[in-house]
Amino acid sequence: MALVNPPYPSEAAQSVFLPLGIGYLAAVLEKEGYSVDVVDCQTKKYTPQSLEEKFRSLNPDIVGVTSATVTYLPALEVLKSAKAAVPKALTLMGGPHVSVLDQQALSDSPDLDVVVRGEGEQTVLELARFVSEQGMMFGLSAIQGITYRSNNQTFSTTDRAFLPDIDNLPHPAHHHFDTNMYKLFGVNYMPIITSRGCPSACTFCLASKMCGHNFRGRSPAKVVDELEWLRDEFGAGAFAFYDDTFTYDLQRAYAICDEMQKRKINLPWDCRTRVDRVSRELLAKLKAPNCQLIHFGVESGSQEMLKLMRKGTTVELNAQAIQWAKEAGISVAVSLVIGYPTETPEMLEQTIEFLYKTKPDYVYMCEAVPYPGTELAYFIKELGLEVDANWNQYREETQIFKNTLLPLEKLEEVKKEFFDNYFSYSYFLRKKVKRDFYSQIMARAALNHRIWNNKTLRWGFKKLSKLRTPKKSKGGYSTSEQDQQT
Ligand code: B12
Ligand code: SF4
Image 1 (cartoon, helix red, strand yellow):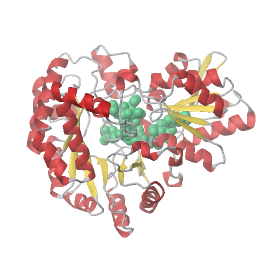
Image 2: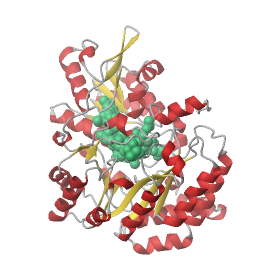
Image 3: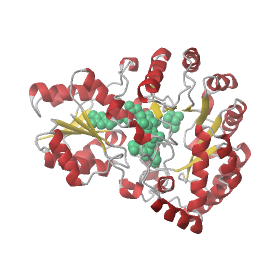
Image 4: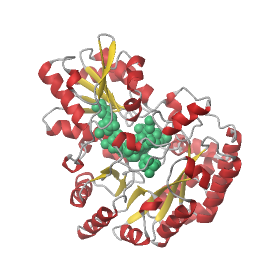
């Protein structure tokens, strides 16, 4: 089987990252004795012709491609090359976009045979068994969690239940990737997921649809086994804990920290969580085994917005968590959702004031993007707002619909003014002199901002970069297009 990470659309260049979904799928298949090839179109550029060549040389019986909304159209192009090269191959697509728009995907492309909805480990195993043991297109109806075409009709089988125990999963098959390609500042910054599922239901997020509302945590011992493996086998120098809400189960978070200390995993790491799932005590506990950065989904400085987003937090809780993390000596990155329907310039101002007051170390300002299947997408439809139909635009930098109360020009103006102030030279120097891994990333982001907002500097750096040999890695931290270009 060939598993493919599709390229980003050219207008949406993003940071590359080790795709955990493909890593898990490859690992379960290999554990059962199937042979797997991985084609990563983000770290290696393919033309349609060279991709066809690649597929011809691999000659797989199944080609599976992953996709988010932003990579959905490129993923269809991948399948076009796959079918042209190996017409007999069964083609699959999985990931958040097609898990929701499964029927649509099949009607969009004759090159797609089967959509895998939701968690894919068990489904892909059954599909592999089905192809190797029975031949194609018979008995697909017995496989849960898929949507497929047969005799020009589409059929959806029942949803597959989420894996009850994710502790049994093997480690993701990172041996298929050249981990040097994802280095940041020379550091192998490796991802790990220690839990799946989020009990919250924020309107702009698809996490609970993808991984369920039940929090399923891996055991602390297994988590730390994986950290040791990442360090010893892949030379990990820092870890990104990509769980939706790492500290949802407080006791488990404590136990992971204890285990990390016991086994002396002293590498820097960062995690993501909700502000209502931390306490002073917990933050001190995270700091002890070297948590250097925590990401909070703060979303807005307006209580009204938080309520509309069904965030379940308050402005006060947000401020308190930031303060506690700083007191514990952990840097804080906050993500915000801006341009949400009905947000007014005054509400946006409240968010900016919140940032000046609480002074987080890093700020992500993400446009409210109505990803298919989210409550936000339904809300926008209900409001009758015009939505961009080009999936290539579905990323955090792009406005997908027009908020009539907060015009794009105003949004851009506020955003620019904020970052011009925030990413000051003194911010850059403060972070630069700290020298730790995360501060270097932040310093780089500030420098990039200054360069891309200054014509002379931009010109100078373009000239310089032409003289430099191209760097191998683009890294997997920042997702801004500007960061990619310096
Ligand atoms: C961690 C994470 C990231 C990390 C990536 C980490 C990594 N190394 O993989 C970073 C920070 C880099 C990231 C970036 C982005 N992310 Co993100 N991310 C997540 C998060 C929190 C977890 C994803 C994850 O790793 N899950 C664990 C793995 C095992 O699951 P998985 O990848 O979904 O794969 C499983 C199934 O989907 C399925 N499957 C997937 N592909 C395939 C293919 C085949 C053939 C088969 C059979 C099955 C299958 O099987 C897999 C195993 O169970 C999710 C929220 C969530 N809980 O889903 C958001 C989420 C996926 N991200 C999202 C977004 C929008 C983005 C960005 C576009 C943001 C931006 N810059 O604008 C980028 C680009 C994403 C991209 N190229 O795909 C959205 C996607 C919504 C959508 N419809 O597109 C989500 C759902 C969050 C949300 N807002 O709702 N993200
Ligand atoms: S934004 Fe965070 S807390 Fe809200 S549903 Fe998504 S993962 Fe859960």
